[in-house]
Length: 159
Image (cartoon, rainbow, N blue to C red; front, side, top):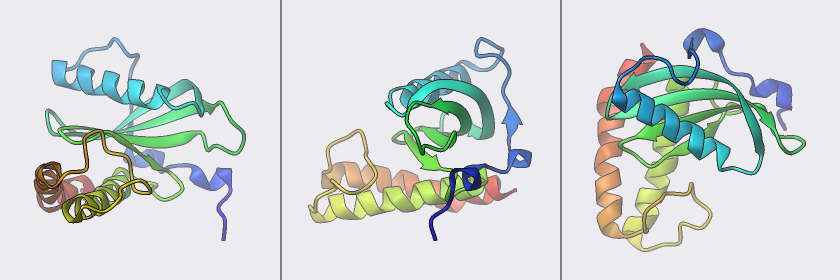
C-alpha cells in the first residue's frame, strides 16, 4: 500500500525544536548543523527549510536532525531526517521512520548494504549514496563505525 504525503509526518514528541541557526552550542554541534542543512539544501527537491529539530546528538560522533521544508517538486513529503557526524551524511524518509531511533536504525541498515557490496566489489549504484569510493578499505572503516553505532549508540537513542 502506497503511503500518502500526510503519512510522512514524524513523531514530534521524540525531537527538540532548534532555536535560530546562529544560536549557542558547541563548535562541533554548529558544524554538524551547518553540514546537515547544506546537505539537505543540495537536493533539488528542497525549496527552503522551514523548521529544524534535534533527534539525537553525541558531539563528534553522530547527529540526527529532523527538517521540515518547503518541497520544490510535487508529491515530495515536507519532512526528512538528516544524519551527519563521523559517518557519511544521508537522509532518511519520514515515511519509514517516525522517530530518531527508527531513522538511525534505517540508516545503519542502508549503510550496511553499501558496506557489504563494497567489500564484495559489487555495484553500489542502486544503494544509498556514500561520499567515498566503494572499496574494501572504505567498507571496513564504515563497517566499524556502523558496528559502534548499532551496539553503543542505537540503544541510547531508543531511550
